Amino acid sequence: MGNTVDYVTDHCHESFKVRPFSKEDALVLSQLSYLKFDKLMPATDEKTYTLKDLNESPGFDSLFANPKYEKPNRALFDATLKAPRFKGLKVCFYINRIDVADETQFCAITFILPGGHPFIAFRGTDETILGWQEDFRLALDKPITGQKLSARYLNDVGARVKGEIMVGGHSKGGNLAMFSSMQCSEVIRERISKIYSFDGPGFRPDLLDEYGYWLIRDRVVSVIPKSSVVGLLLSGNRDSIVVSSKRTGMKQHDPFNWIIEDGKLSETHLTEQHVMLLDSFNQWMFSLDEEHLNGFISMLVGVLDATQADTTLELTGEAYKYAMNVIRAAKDLDDETKEFLSGLLKSFYELMKDRMKTEIQTKIEVKREELSAKLEVRNAEKQKRKKNTKTKKDRS
Image (spheres, rainbow, N blue to C red):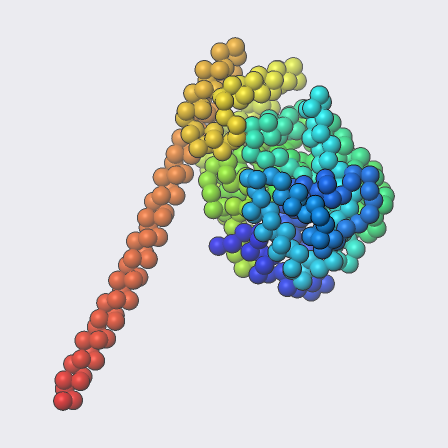
């Protein structure tokens, strides 16, 4: 039961000519976009760098500046560096713009695959509450700065690279991949072959129509974990590929927890209860006009901040505790919104509780089966020894 690191280590011996580019490859590149290239690749530098160039750079360790993900990111980079499939992979056109005043964090990088095809990757968010808030704004607001920058980046890079273009990203990066593909120039859009969104927030239905989703729909590959929250925000997409994860709750948003078996993402399905909960949320959001929608987002930011939780992992780790903090902090919300938030959080808590029970029961059943199998082996060996002993006695 492996992940992307195991995929690269065990299944990336063939070139792209032998085995075509896959969603698993897109996931690898989308995860590599989280590396901190700032000290190795100046934003204004159009030079291309190989992974070997980066590995031999004096500032190499700065790629893994995020201590939370240093170990998996380093393992993924090392595996990709050694994999024959990615031999000759180049990176270029790195940009990382942070504007506190504008509440904008935009990052993108272009990978040039062996053979010359470009893959444009937009960096996503992490598990911070701030990142979760940004996912809400991406899904609910009209174009925010980051989305506008993504379309500009795709146009600029598309004009400088040759051939078919693939675009992708995880979380916010998936949303930016879709937005930029809808809003780029027609000339660039016609060159896009695939658009990968890995658990990325969607868009309001009216905005999908306004942005021209029908222009790219047949090229979108959406992948979400089985308990997805972010990837189903403001999304009516039931065509997503649902994959299994080693973890539960919001921890499933981390692709390092997604299961890859025999070189393929392990596919599963959404539970009816989970879909019902998120459909209820989306339906409620669709019913709000723009004024109330913007008001809700602003209040939601304040309410989540008042929970005193730094990450969504904390919210799901002690769900009920933080749910109560949210409800107490929502004193300034109107009664309808208070009631909805309270119901949503309680339902989410119950959902997580049920899932944990199911997970524990499954583990118990697996242990029982393993124990039963061991007992059968022991009994068989015991019977064999008895038979051999009897045979020896009969011979004597």
